[in-house]
Structure formats: structure tokens, C-alpha cells
Image 1 (cartoon, helix red, strand yellow):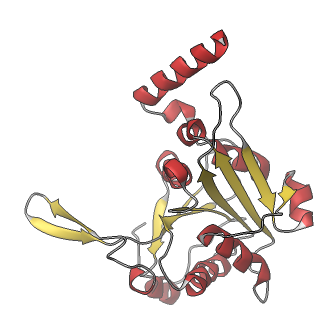
Image 2 (tube, rainbow, N blue to C red):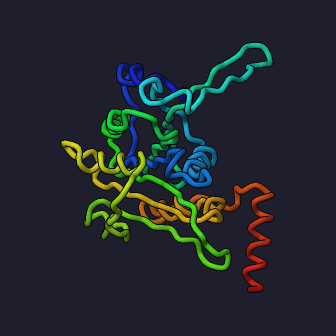
Length: 246
């Protein structure tokens, strides 16, 4: 599957998915250590996600803040890659449902219109659950488990997935705005809007937030640790050895 313009998809028809779940992460304010966006990228790789579409970046990004990149193709021609948000689809091994993976950069402007574009895709693909991932830096000792917090925006979903109701008040990022758009739209875009937030840099390496989310929401796990680079595995081994000696 080749990444296509949204207009083309609307003309030719969207792919038919089964019990689709959307998992989204955005670089920026809610993505300490690239833990959230890196986790979604990891899922794309291990589950061979197929490109679906890219949002047109012109309306949402300040290119003096998020600059495009120039690269050489075959050492001859130059290609410009624009910062944006991309979507892909996959079916995890052994699963009876499909995943829509959303990975991009927190937009610089027009957040409501940006969320509307994502919700258009949610409706077109009949997504019934949206899970957003985030990460914050925290003073987490290596001898203790890293905290992973899962919240839901409605009581029914909180009980179903064993999560807490969101009680946060204060400044928010695109993750919070997207979650709000999912549950307050007319009609409501999805049946459940869930948020998983991880704390600490060790968690950024292990990508525990999506693992916990997928266990609770979808009943499956992804082989995160087995896919870590040898350098990361050596760091983890040293940390665990020190933790055992403490």
C-alpha cells in the first residue's frame, strides 16, 4: 500500500478494517525522550504497517519551527521531506482486529481543524477506540518500577479497561485536544477515548506505555524489549544488575 493523498482515498474508497483501534502519538510537548512517538514507530516496524495517508502540512505547521529536510536520492536528485502527521494500518499477529497507527508532530496552529481531519479518518475507517500515548520526564529511581498511568474520558470505558477517569486540569497539548474532540463531537466520534502516560527515561527505552495500553485494551503485547538495540540491552542489563545489588 502506498501513502496516498486523502482526496484520492475519498474518491477510490477507504480500506475496510475490522474492529479498528487507533493508537496515536505526537512529537513535542507530550513526548519526553521520544518515548511515545518512538513506540508507535516501533509498532509500525515490527507489525509491517502499511502507509495510508499523510495530512497536508501547509495548514498546520510553521516551517521555521519544524523545518523540512532535504535528502539525496541515489546521490543525484534532491528530495524535500515535509514535517507532518502520517497514518498507517496493520493487523498484529494473532489479532482479530486492525490498528490505525498515527505518528506525527504536534501542530503549530489550527489544532481544532487538525483534530477534525483525524476524526474524519476515524469515522471513515469506523474506528471504535482511540488510544493516545504520551511521556513526561520524572525523577524515577532505577530500583523502582516506572509509573504508567492510563486514563479514560468516560466511566464506562474506565471500568471496562481497568483505567482511571481523567481528573487532570491545566495546560494541555494536542493529545488532550484530540481526546476532547473524540468524546465531545456531534455525534461522538468513538466509543472510548483512552490516554496512556509514561513517566521516566527508563520507560522511554522500554516503551512500556503502549505495552500496558495494548494489554488492557486489545489483550495483546508487542515484543518491545527483544527489539531494542544491543546498546540499550546492555544499559538495561547494567541497570538491573545494579538494582539487584541495591
